Length: 243
Image 1 (tube, rainbow, N blue to C red):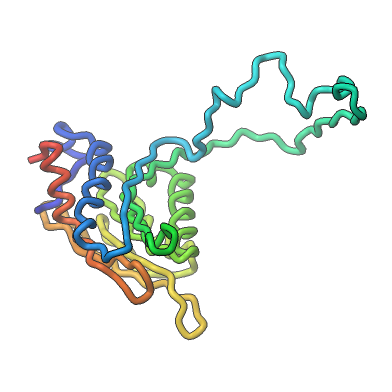
Image 2: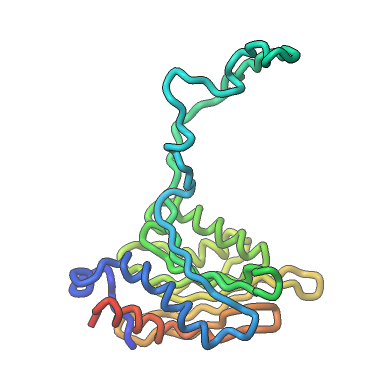
């Protein structure tokens, strides 16, 4: 079950990388079905594009119409008249470039505790690594999950963009860990022990033409199951006709 390079010939001419990353989370969920203990469930989550998913068409007003707060009171239907709100001008107005955030992930929940999120498997895309603001957004999201007690697994098989997001995540939380291999699967979690908040992790290299590794998938401080990436990856490739 060797790892292919999905970003260079010959594989990139057969399959776009987004097709693999879109398929793989669902296949991982299928394989976790026989691994997760009773009471735990997994679900895929794929979201492309902007961090802000707003229905712009529904919120856009016709030209010439004013927001309720911007209209002068017209007598309030015979009630007590109220003073119109004077809209304050912004102090600073600058052009901002919001990073587009791709999410290819699997989320694991503890259904016994009201579907509490306990683990997230993050498949890194080229867009997560392409700019500083994209890397910052991805790292901040992972750090927020860890802070909430969610175990996070990062899987980086992007061969065409540099950047060590796992090392940046460790730096974000104040840890100076060793540099990661160019391609890797890293599983980490935040635990409290002896009154101290600790970050624990396992990082395994991934090598082109070599089998994919197995890493722990932490479900609670005392419970982990093996996350064997090879079988789900191979099935996703097979289903997408990748030789």
